[in-house]
Image (cartoon, rainbow, N blue to C red):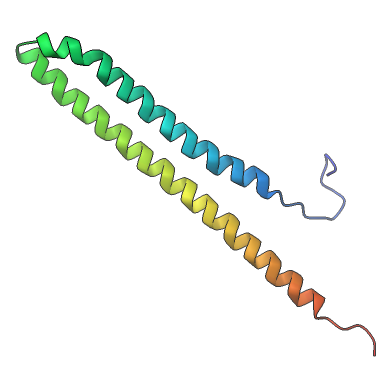
Length: 107
């Protein structure tokens, strides 16, 4: 593929799209692992913690966990959308290829 993209051809690389989808899903999984690890590390401290500040922390942690869950859903939804776009583009390209293969030249 030329660097300046002025050769008149359209280049499509499905590998880049597939990699982006995989990366979105991987990042979501990594974020979830980090949050779970932090929650486990803090559990021993929380077991001995008493008072209003613990309740305030619990509320903030629940909100934080919900925000991470929402982000994971959002990232997964975007990954699915990108995957759907790639699939539809591939189907369209195959359809167009078949259309051109049916064109008769001459007589």
